[in-house]
Length: 429
Image 1 (tube, rainbow, N blue to C red):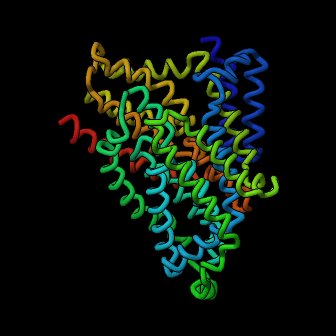
Image 2 (image 1 turned 90 degrees about the horizontal axis):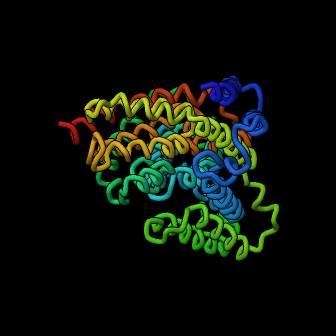
Image 3 (image 1 turned 135 degrees about the horizontal axis):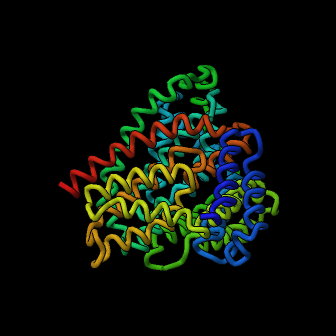
């Protein structure tokens, strides 16, 4: 227990400072990581080579690869094309535009993954909002919430699902059959909630709307040849993500290969595409992984996981709500990737043939729903949240921790609460 004091104190202080939003979050995360490393809580091997306590390089390099691909795509004018197309389809009506963007985001997050999706959609959103005289922040928040909901539906949609599938021996189709029906309902509920949550921001500039409706989106494409090459590479990358269970090539490797190939065929100067790399976001993730890794190293997260396991008392009816709500709360506080990495072996032990809850696969769905949907509650609960906040800040539309959380917490609570009767009715009664 005495070994807990420093890593817990550092993480708690860093969390308070991030919430306070007065100091740069990247600086806070790196200083916190530096303290636990300098104090010897985690060593070089723990930091750089351990799957359980180190930096998750798969996440870092997946983001880096996709950021470079987005940087090349930006040079083609395709984001301007999509912005004009979306605005014209919505006829300039803000709520209709939000619904359209959220449905597209949720659908794309289910097919790809939520981090990749927000990297592609966020620049489009900022462009269309600026063109219509709308404040981009509510639209960005709504999109990332929709991406986390949509990503819950499939194995590749949210990084924690990949970890759960690996530990539980679950297939792509298992996620579709068991989670996709609920996700459709949750998305519909969220879109209705968005009408109320963001109602103050549904005011567009009529003159800008009229101007947008007269634009020809095809004229926005500045380099058609580069666009074709980029789309071919992007399609190959997305196919690599979907075929991960067959190819066994990590998404991070696929993203880096795609980025390298696209840089090669684009022949753009380095500065043109490297400008879109969110270095602050990548460093923030690295620092956060190290601080959470320190908590894993000293046994804090294992103790929490064991407590959840012991509290089930071998009863599925007790285990499911405890796992669902416990995962949601903890995933709101720490990134859901390290949490699921730590918790999935506990669930695997519970549902093993000789475990106290043998064969109760519903526990996997409770863990997935709690971690994925609970990640919506705070600005650092899911990787996609952190990425969108970085993009927003870089484009001059910063989103504070509390502005995100006041919406995310409501949506997370509603969707997690709705998940319980679904799990109860479908699997326990």
